[in-house]
Length: 114
Image (cartoon, rainbow, N blue to C red; front, top):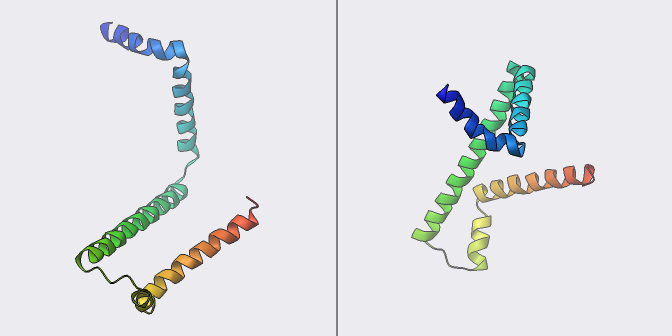
């Protein structure tokens, strides 16, 4: 009985403010999602999550590597050094990927009439 009384005492502010209703609604929504979700949906969501984590990890690693290289061996700040960097195949591939991504985002933004 003491544990039930302690629980009711802690729930009293939630009941008074109507916030317990929000918790119940959230639990109901979660229950519905669990009922709707099948293995294919769960695997698809897991794949999307894994892709996002990988993208974040790779981006962070690339940023750390570039920062370390610039700290250890800072290149001269000139257009010639920038042009030399642009001539490297890895740089061109990265720029192509970035520009193509921006192109797709722009096309989708135009098509969806944001």
